[in-house]
Amino acid sequence: MTGLATTSLTVRFGGRAVLDAVDIACAPGRVTALLGPNGAGKSTLLACLAGLRIPDDGVATLDGTDVHALDRRARGRRIGLLPQTPDVHWDADVATLVELGRFPHRAGWGRSAADIAAVERAIAATDIDTLRSRVVNTLSGGERSRVLLARVLAGDPDWLLADEPLASLDPAHQLDVLAVLRAAAVAGAGVVVVLHDLNHALHVADDVVLLRAGRVIAAGATSAVLTEARIAETYGVVSQIGTARDGSRFVVALGRSG
Amino acid sequence: MSPARFVALLALALAAAAALSLVAGKVWVPFDAWRATDPRWLIIAELRLPRTVLAIVIGAALGLSGAAMQGYLRNPLADPGLFGVSSGAALGAVLSLYFGYAASALMLPAFALAGAAGTMLLLALLAGRSGSLIVFALAGVIVSSVAGSLTALAISVAPTPFAVTEIVTWLMGALTDRSWDDVRIAFPLVVTGAVMIVATARALDALTLGEAAARSMGVDPARLQWLIVGGVGLCVGASVAAAGIIGFVGLMVPHMVRRVVGGRPSATLLPSAIGGALLLLLADIAVRALPTVSELRLGIAMALLGGPFFLWLLASLRRSLA
Image (cartoon, rainbow over all chains, first blue to last red; front, side, top):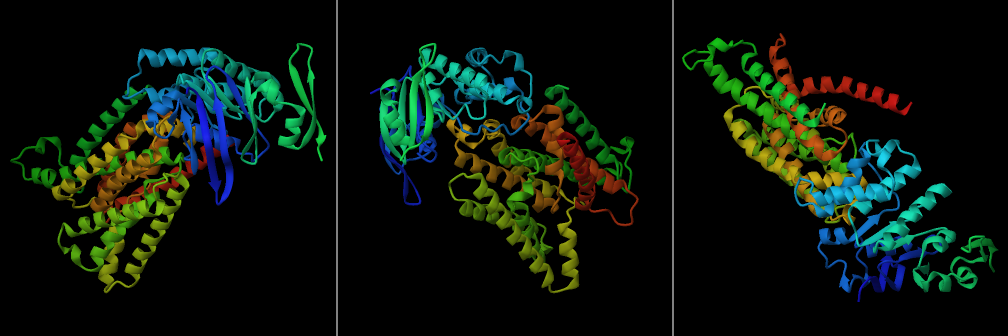
């Protein structure tokens, strides 16, 4: 059983189930979008998959092994996480920050040829070569999000987990980040991403998981799962799904349902 | 300036300051008197040398602890005293003075170290095993204020005015008349603490990205917290036991160092240690060489430096915000 999956995963906050017996399965080489209204449990689910939160019930598994049974560093090498509000606490330059992504691979102080190569690949993949010596906290939002994504890619993870990586980006930069996620999946990584905008899911996701109030409403291939009826059920809005000039699909929310 | 050159420069300055420290004081001992046959050699061997070594050890301990605390709490205003370990150590020392045990030379440091150990234990119990930063910082504030109020209580109910004077004077911190005994107590504790702190260096770097990212890369928050509490506790506890409370070193030095080596926490550790040693040594030379009636207390001298430093910090902060 390969892939990142959960089996009857349950998380409670003060007696209230934030995730209630969630079963999902994400496959390598594909982009899986976690969708749902605010408070549906998307971020909590991602934290469980990353091994940051111990579920009250059930398990999150990587290739069949409980993610908590994995050694911390080994897990860090295999699963890379881009948190929702990626802080940068000190004035680090871009190259130094990206190199932090090598943390789970490095035992001592030196940097190996593999470290340097991985950092260079990550810098090339996110197109931040010209920013190398800039201080991260002086970058624009779009540049910053690419740099933080490069940090995760530098770890060469088999799995790339991102929590709302498009928040507060303009459309062009959103497309840039989506392209990087897509490229990571094409290169073989499993990508699991929490998204707010259904159009982004239609744009990038192979599979989607629809969550509402801690339960899975539907999961599967994007075109099959993301229907007007399911959107109504999940978000409580009337929507219309259309086809754009280039053949890609888009969705418009028309109003609240019911 | 490259970090390596900066460290070399600091080390050179420290060596020069150490030589000056052996020469300077109420009695100046020029280099040509540095012979075992010269009567002034005794001043160097038994007074100036242990005092100089102690200033270096304590200054390094405080500078390193400050850099580690600021990196760990990701707050440039964090100070090694924030945990309450120094307040706890001070309380222990004050109790030994209060009960009059301090007549024996080893009792005061022993009490101070017991106070520091008690504080660390209390901190560990209060903060629990979550490794959470906020819980931990709050626990530190609680422990610190409780120890502070107990110290104030001990002063207010002290049996004699003499005891009050003794306690208050001790609290101000000084390196006057310290002996090799103090060095022998402080040195191994500081070295142990420093090893623990240095072991956190890369985890502190990872923490630059925030707690979630650091954990996802394999940082164990509970282990990190344990190493920081233990390392800073040993360094600060030993420092207070040997010299009383000396503030601001741990706050100021990492700031100055960061201007040269940048913000990466691991890069600030070594220069902060050497810089702390240099600052404390220079301050100690100054209080000795100043022609005051009685020697200015080192803790007060540091506090006097701290005020203007904060003013400068505020000014540069306002500039960067403007």
